[in-house]
Length: 285
Image 1: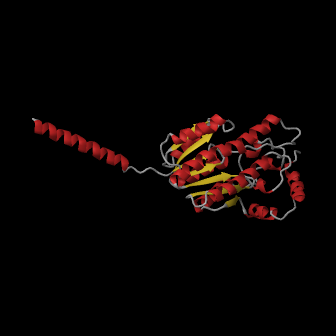
Image 2 (image 1 turned 90 degrees about the vertical axis):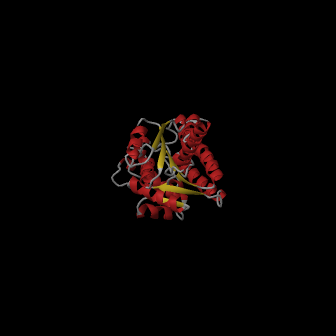
Image 3 (image 1 turned 120 degrees about the horizontal axis):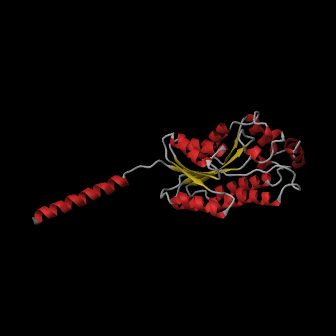
């Protein structure tokens, strides 16, 4: 009987070992995370990741985040939605802890969430401007800190930071928004250089005006930006951003050739000229 018992124990041990080996040999897709991933450019970026075989964790403030996750799952990947307010410390930290609890390395991160605010500076509520800064600057720095430390510890990763072509010009009647995006662009460029040689790349995406709800949500329906018919296709902007991220490019201007040429012209156009030109487009009618 002793021999039979011993044989059974060996069989159980061997079976358990094979099960562990099986688990260790399981292969997950790569994991990407996208902030502001429920709609607009963020959702299009999430779809780009899914189309290229990434599982995707996405955050958003509205219930739509769960519907967006279902669309991603239909592409044959895992999608992990997290509903939170990106304008708060707990919202940003909560999403990061949610991603961290997946127990997987983050291979790519699109830090895309952003808020616009149109109107004259003297007329806008200070609380609205503080919220914009909390999302576009404070939240960006907060999440980038978590992601960059995670990726450098792993020795690899790709970070995409969504700025705006507004970073290249004064933005009257978006007087807090433009500088917040200029911060994002400079931040991306600075972090990229710091992380050089670490295995982690940083790419900035500078979209031009895009056919999303962004300007409507910013209260700019009574400006030229209230009309989406002439704007860049958000799917194409996201594709350009994704490709630049995968190539490890420094930055990319998202949009058509006219948008890209505008970014080039902004390098040499005097600031007062750019400010006056932009005011014609953003001044409430």
